[in-house]
Image (cartoon, rainbow, N blue to C red; front, side, top):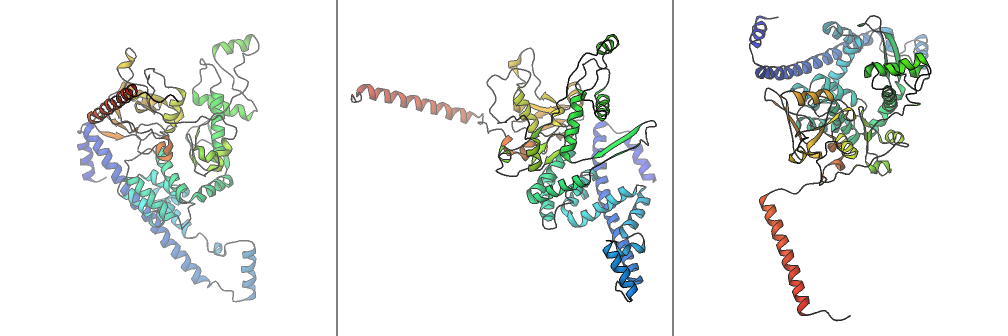
Length: 497
């Protein structure tokens, strides 16, 4: 650590919270630029090691068979689908992985990920990479872009990159869930076949692994890589079973989900309740029935035209992201459907709890929690009144209308309600959050209305003195015309036929 850094750290300790927020923003930008340089260096190391490897191969063998014995060996290797270069040991990528991994002290898998990202930064996604270099993206967001555009064809990747970079620079930073949707929407627009290739890859790469937890002695870690639809189905089943026990059950939600997974492995369709009443019943006699089955529930937003087969626009699976049209239709084949239509606010919006349709419209229009940086699924959130609801005098403000409602996860709902954070929401649904230090953050830089234009609220009439004057003038003219017609009819009655 240099003396300059030590001095700077000592100076930081004397800064106020307002000033330290600026330090955080500066560090984020500097870190992103450093990550750009790191990825570029990793890619350049790979290129140099690949050149070294190819030079060794060329020096050892020209690639041509000079004897019948060599020709036979090469033919046998080709029939066995063996790489003729394997006899020369690790290739350039493997050598670069070892070198990058040693310098950065990361696993070979992580080293490979960084090398691939560096190659994408230089060749496939240069404009999006520029967003990383300038601090508009962090490394995590850029790696999302790399992985989710990996199956785009060489003919389409340039359009995807340009569109994605334009979307990034047109908006403030956003949560990873929203950014992932932006990337997937760009892929769906310019290379819809890539979504199908992604589904095929997910089917081919599905797996489940169980191994000891390195960080928690006595625990095991179970992980699975599944197609999105399959993962959503399992997640919904676990959530439904975790909701079966009574409210007095002492377990947390996460503990009940873990127990539900174990119950499924034992071919059990319900989760046993451990509340005091059920425990006492189990001792005295047969356990009280909690539920005979758990109905899994997941939420998908889709255009009606896609469900009818008129187009193949992708849908949105809550908590997971973009889903291709065919998968979406199969998931919705036997599902309960609810049609959403943005309508003007109801005349009486003084009730505290929004209607079920209004809640669905708000969640579909936001994709996830509205708080900056949060990716909590929309259907797991609370519906929050931006202008607080007045329980004593509901007519005085805090109306239960779409322009005053937004989804917030329970954590951020409590932060907004009980701390110095403040929020502001306009009729277009834009939500700004003001921190205790006075800094402003946009919570929903990309929303469901960007993905599904039909979710946008109908334009409201401008509340302007000139508008009111014109409305009053039209009413007077209409009344005057009506009176003139009545006088004319009284003076000259119509013929009797």
